[in-house]
Image 1 (tube, helix red, strand yellow):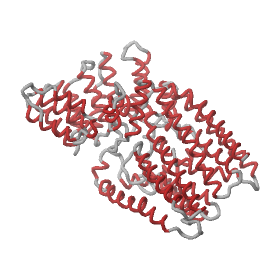
Image 2 (cartoon, rainbow, N blue to C red):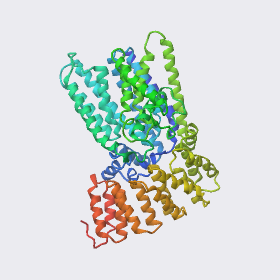
Image 3 (cartoon, one colour):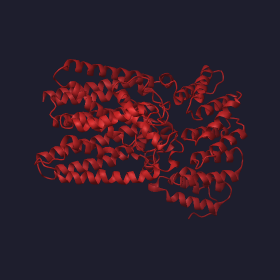
Image 4 (cartoon, rainbow, N blue to C red):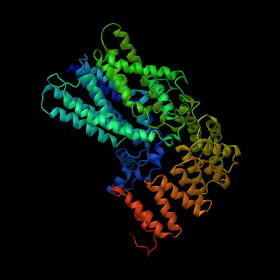
Length: 631
């Protein structure tokens, strides 16, 4: 009882330290994907608390086809209580992080106790405390949009704790209550977690790994319990087979990789290095590694290109073999490695995602700590040295997280910090230049305006750079009435012609179009048309790029026919994205094409699930001529 109380007191201290080191970072601003998901997503900024508004918010996320409704709802609630002040949104993230720390503590305590670890309460508290202050987990706290990750893992942890509690009950008696609790916990945790982010789909895998390494599929009589085999066949093996077959059709299509600078093979080879790198970034992090932007990563073009690819593949095979070899003697160490590897099976395999994000280790880092901390805390030879090493690591983690959190507390400080950590990252250099532009408020006499050119020019010249730096340079000079360097236009069009434009290129052209439409930028029409034609020269252009060109054709070129065709193409490219259909309806109505407008409105109404489009539909209906009756 005393040991458990000591563990609880240590956890309380760890939580207070976590709040202290993160507090300065709560005063920072929004960053990167916060903008499309929160700032530019008006659906999560409801005017009042109403059912229709909340449904609209819940189904508004542009981050995923699954909409992540619970995460979006939480942003809407933050907005209703604190507006767009990022402090309250970051504070909410910190509270979720603290709750997750408590849940990791409870899960660790149960697993350690089952495996016979001495002083399980204190060791569990050290695992959870270490996890709370790990620098690699910082972006899941201070990067507002990554509440999706932390919130999904809250339900994953609740599901695992419920599963373990059910298994303990199954080992005490033969009645069905424990089994039902385990089943319910895994299924409910997965379904609830999926409303925040798709990574919750890994909960059944984590439960299966715990079963393999800790419980061994045994029941109260010590024999194999067939119910567990049936359970994991139904909730893990079968869904995995179906999901893999579904995704395989997608990833084998070359179009799925058109906007990525790597192929499927290159992604798998690169991720082998990345997953090994994450171990160092987690346990022995250096500031240069945790740089937020990782677009300077050298993609693996072959097993020996670079040679570390082969070394990483060998390391992963050794880790996998180690899990099997250590299973009986050191089950927790084996489980920790298995959980770490399992946590990356979704984001480090065949899906055409970006290669690297630190927040992908939010759960995976727990696996590494579950392996490391009990080994360093165990008695026997060198125990003093091992515990001193753990103390040193805790101090390192705490200091680096505090330093980085302090940088997050002010946008310019953060931009400078990450630009210094990643001098060869186009995104980091662009973000520094963009921050200077924002601070200049487009005033030509602002000292920040002069500072913006160097990082933006550097970002534009770096390998793998998108068209965002050129867009920022063009728009800054246009808004300040300065001459626009022709080299920027040449570089912009060349990049759009050289490869299939990605999301950042879409944003660049959309920003230039908006600036021109609002009368803030006098941009040469021919240069803009050339850039759009370069972007559309590839097969299957994105709906965003088509829509941006349609916007420019309608409002600047005054070419109604071209604008309408582009709007139709955007709808065809993304038929379930309602914003493009709404734009098309407005264009058709403006040209008096009432019947076609009605057809498109009917199609829009078919997408109006749970009334989330009621406001848009009512507004569009008001635009129809008085003699045009609604269907």
